[in-house]
Length: 148
Image (tube, rainbow, N blue to C red; front, side, top):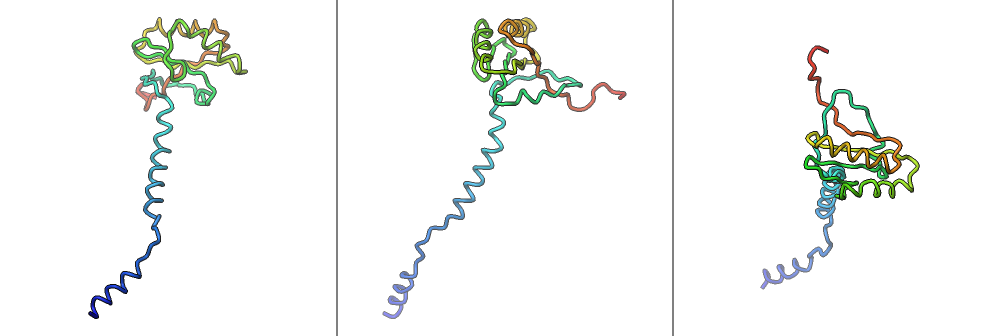
């Protein structure tokens, strides 16, 4: 009987507090994962941009209110992240430009996109009242020219 009563008194010492440390650890790991992945999701349209040696930085293209037109290799046109009909590009850009003072449009074209599709997009945004058109490219890694 002495053993049973000792086991019974030990069960009354059970700690009923919740240990939140593992939960906080998991939440911090999830927060870090989302912080790393979120910037990758901003350019949803997958485009292999032209690579050049002397790219000019255009930091305004990364702002939230920047108007970016993307043209894929198969000729699809995107305004922001939404695919649109190429014939509606001019009117949609004109609507977006009404509330902006900076009338610059940025064009992200795939390196294998047809020149005519890019030229038509530039013509459409120019007729919509765009002051400046910026062509976005990627800086080539390393110097492939050789002797410099």
